Image (cartoon, rainbow, N blue to C red; front, side, top):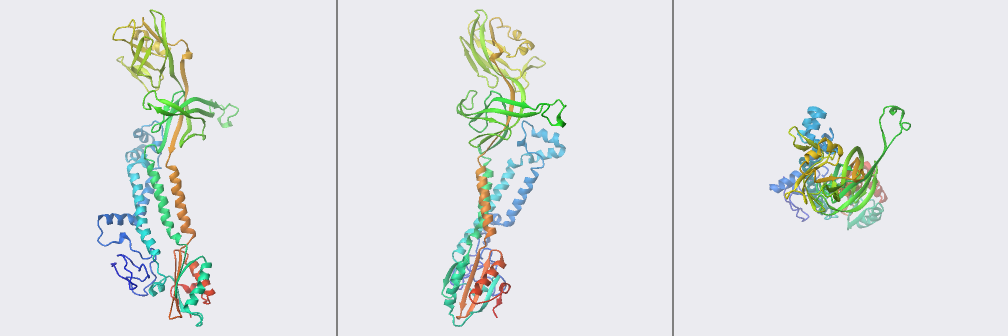
Length: 554
């Protein structure tokens, strides 16, 4: 059990201190019982408190390196399991509850039910990252603050028991009785400084130290990892991270969710290989192989009415998108990854005609993507009561839509105006002639067919989209912070690998008895060899291996 003990040097040490923060005297062991544990210079840490309170117990749990390793291992295993099958966000328009079972069988079903199909966005995975971050912070604070205080309080003249219990020790006599202890110490100062040491003296005692900054390497690592984890967690904030797959019909601006931007596929171009250009193994298969496909894209920023069907847009960027040549704008990326030939009616520029007076009003535009709720056309008002992108009738003659894609659009209007009933008349308009014939538009509009007609004068008034371009929309505002965390982590690694914190303590007693203790964070042979060279220049010749704990000068 550790006690709060006042050292014989007069320094009052906190509870849990193993070595006196001032002179280094062991507070719990007898003199000369083996090399000292110098990992944290014997400092007292909060995690070592006796009779800890609840907060101290939580602190102790997260300050444990063993707990940190277990958390990292669990997270690593979860990350590996998350790669067994593709994650949900790698697909476009799938039902994961059905897809995984149909594709991978029972294991796929279990994979989905246990939430592994969305591992990296799950609450439990993020909780693991938060716990790792908490462990890193508490582990660092529990050690680095007391260690900093201990290293800045070092006393030059260390206790004898501290010196002789280092792993590198020398005890002997001064090389010449004619040289005083103070003179010998002063002669060692330039030798040590030439080796890169910072030297402090106190009459017949000396402390030489270099590369103390390397002791902070592991804590710099922790800072880098903490920044990295915070950046990963920030990806869950709205607008910080996006990785979605969207289809963009030609000529239709589409809102990019969680951003103020709309993107329009103004024109899609595809170029196919000729039969002669194809490799031999692909020839004669009657298959069209695309050589190049490109989206002429326009990016808009919404200024007003962003959630309405008629937002106010301002063009901010224009770029052609090809495979591996994405659109880039203020961190927003749009990658080309697929296309589909889908001939769809995008818009219809129609006119309303009063058959009795042969007067036409308009034209006005019907947008099949997001039609307006009402249209004022001359003396008439058309209120959109229903819209069916792909019109169909069930067995009972009730209309419904097969999909949200405008393959066979139908507009249901309530028309009010001259020569019509006061409450208005219902009119169903089909832009495609084939749909007018298939569903007998005149019969459906029997009440007003002899009075009102809505139509186009030519096919030039019909906007057709031939292609749908599929783009991968990405945004990652956290990525710079991830890089910063990685760079800081590598700085810490380099600090810890390429430099060693070395200290040499020397004290001379009775004007002739010299005792030297040395410590390093690693590379013990290196410090023994260096100390051997330093002593040799001072007239004390000793082999490096003789400096291993306790060898005395003959």
